[in-house]
Length: 150
Image (cartoon, rainbow, N blue to C red; front, side):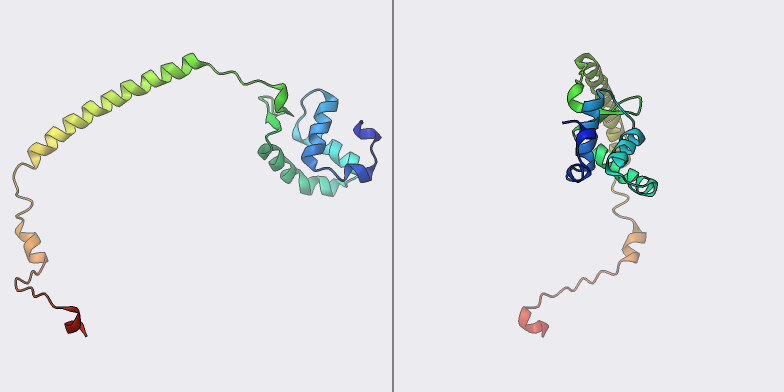
């Protein structure tokens, strides 16, 4: 049944996204957000104020509903009218680029690790007298039992 033949009471039973899908099916072409919502507002006899207040929420509902797809020309259409093309060759090239980059990073890390090892060969940082002065270490440590803690 065409939307124009339905009563306002019947139309109010549908969500805005349901109405949008029905409009896109009837129109057989993609439409932008304001065009779709204006048609919905006309069908439901909503005011211009309602249009202005609700169009943002309507847009959000279109973006989250998997029924719709936003096209490059900023129009909405039904997802089932469009197919997704995968270009596997591009993905393979990207993987090769990543592998090369990964190998280069591994080489750089190996170089850095060997330089850092030479810098840390002596234990001079561990025997820093400034560190010993900063921490007051008591050589007379005693272990006490739980009953002595009270």
